[in-house]
Length: 353
Picture 1 (cartoon, rainbow, N blue to C red):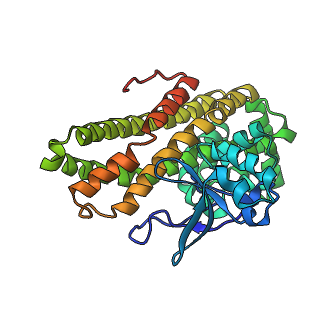
Picture 2 (cartoon, rainbow, N blue to C red):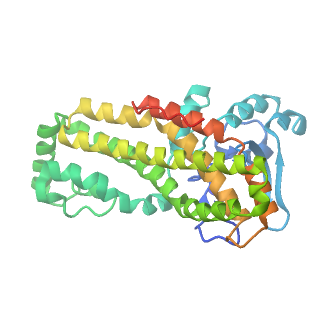
């Protein structure tokens, strides 16, 4: 997969660049089996209205050259077969590697499994979440032997001890406590690592926009206090809708992430192949829903933070227009997707429509 860097905050922002490989809202077409060589250097991107565009070129000087997904066949006459593929991909709500594993399989699009992995740089950023997911597992089995786990590789490192006798003892103990055959433990650890990394990735994606969300409340509060806004029913209604929608999405995502944490805790208390399969199914079945809503939230907040890098930018009219034309579109769909994702893991529906 192409690993272009993408600074979603723009020149006024402080967020570190995110590679296409790790982005939740970008799909490099280099990983897709297309006929057109030119299209293979392009990528699909989501705009602030949550629409998909085919970005053919992007640089700081000439800007972004985009076409609509439905115009691919017309723009590239020799790539008629690519039109159907790109049209299908454009309908996906998220391009993170975890939801893509499910989505591409359903679409019958075969790609190299190695491209559907986070970059090493992203895995390094997720290290601080690793202890939360790995140490309880190993402590449950080895007691104080878990104290040397400090990153996501620690789960595997304890079985790479030079002391072969100690490693054999650990393997036997883990096999005994989990009912997992010794020869299957390496694969189990690999699968466990992948599952907790997916949860850590979604948590990281959400927490990356929390500062923007917190600043947005101040920005919105100031906008609502302006006389020009208070006398415009349309703008007042838009302010109310955007606020209620974002508060619901933020709180519900937190609740779902908390549900995932509880699922891990339940597994730590009763570790066996069946309980792990249940854990993995519950989390993987929610990848598409979590990715979709998070992608929408990330795109909305990143777009807003680029347009308004600080709360002094833009007058009431400019802010109101952005709220109505860029922030409001797509929120109804995000709320519906979030409620659907809640239902899939047994959470109650929230009616704020």
